[in-house]
Amino acid sequence: MTESTEVGELAAQVRAVLGDGPTAVLTGAGLSTDSGIPDYRGPDSPPRQPMTYQQFVGDASFRRHYWARNHVGWHHMRAARPNPGHRALVALERRGQLTGVITQNVDTLHEVAGSHRTIDLHGRYDRVICLSCRQVTRRAELADRLRTLNPDFSTAVPEIEIAPDADAAVGSTEGFRVADCVDCAGILKPDIVYFGENVPKARVARCYATIDAADALLVAGSSLTVWSGLRFVKYAARQGKPVVLLNRGPTRGDPWATLRIDAGCSPVLTALAAG
Image (tube, rainbow, N blue to C red; front, side, top):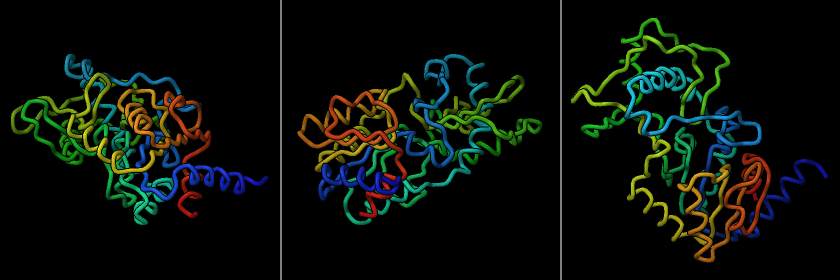
């Protein structure tokens, strides 16, 4: 059996379970690996220790270290482009087969690819929020300020390891100057839900509504290790809706899966959209 035949058969299995739709989609970091953004918990991923919300707000040295690394990682992240998996979901949306895409990713690649019904469950890397006055600004504006404050800090680091939240494996960050809110001098934080922080209730409600309007749930590229994503699998299963899990390696949602596909997202989603 050729690789293309095998992928076609996997897509046919997915199609048979999902039916004619509409389908709700939940995506994770595994969908963006083909865009050059490493995932958190894939089979080949190195161990990662993401910064927690408590560390960020409670320790100025942690914030300095994070913003220095993010100043490098942000430049690499914004150079990433959508891959065939993102484009396949756009094609399915345009045909009316999706109620929406709930993404655990912060890379905005669904939007860049052309998806219009996207919920950024964990926020977006391209925005910054003030923890005091709650004003949201563009990350690009902060990049200019950080560049001015740190003229000798280079962001051109070749072959650097980038995490899915735009964090970069930079060694020394001593002396890096952090920018505060221009309006109230409050602490600035990426508009991303950190570990130890809750997803806004209104956003979660939108996700549930997306699943309510669907006949099935497709999960693509997520190990479902954290509750923020797993709850939607359990919610769909409680409603008696088919759940398809497409991911390399096992997931925490396997007990609730109607169909489990251990494969890469891009080829299977592309074949699914083509069918």
